[in-house]
Length: 298
Image 1: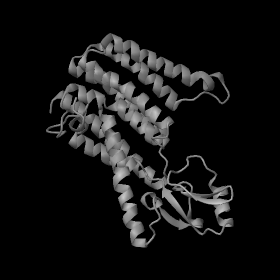
Image 2: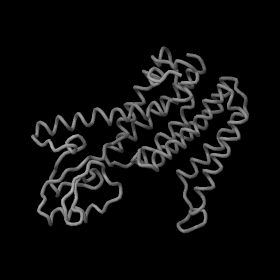
Image 3: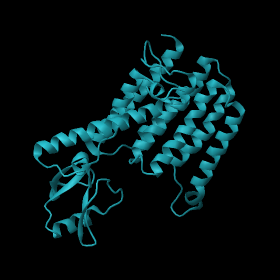
Image 4: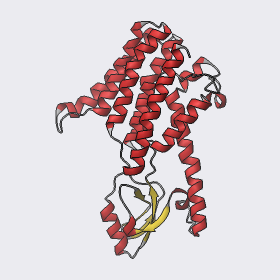
């Protein structure tokens, strides 16, 4: 194993260890603290100069940490409530991130090696946007992908893996490793989980669509707000169903309204411990590689 492979193996071992612990916590409590993702990001930042040394890359490329740190500062550190830092801090941090990305992109964006590094803050910004638009629902999930972006500026290459290398250097920049992990995890949740619910509900003889694809019915008294989202409620005096959970809801109030309407069993969708599919996706992505380059050749 040469030095480059040793760095890749170290990155994978760190990610696997942290995600394995996070998956256990997610299953047990549905909560994963910031410490896991801060630790992963710190390892990524520490390994960055090691990677540059191994690859004999220019040290000025380390300026990519400026937008990375600006984004991490907003994600993990908040100002005091009602303070100027809390009010204007995020705008300043993202302004620093975007402006610095533009500047370093102008300086070295044409260099193939640096394009991989530049993809790190770009991917981080994309994850923040996906979270803001509710396409990534959990805060811990978003932080996991942000930290994975920092930890993996390059696809990990160990031995004969991954099986599928990028068809071109550009494809591995456009589809960075963290993005591949995100897509694979989304496929697991979007395809495998609905099929599992469908089979379960078919066996139970309860096939109300589309709810049967996203959850199941359980007794009102068994609903735990840490583990379930509602898929039905009493709204303006009417009993309504919906398939997309609402992030901010007063669960106790909604359950009281349902009970008052004589509803004893309610459609719910479980808060899937997303760390589990992320962990599975990390393993699959490390083995398979940049499969997106096969679907979208660049």
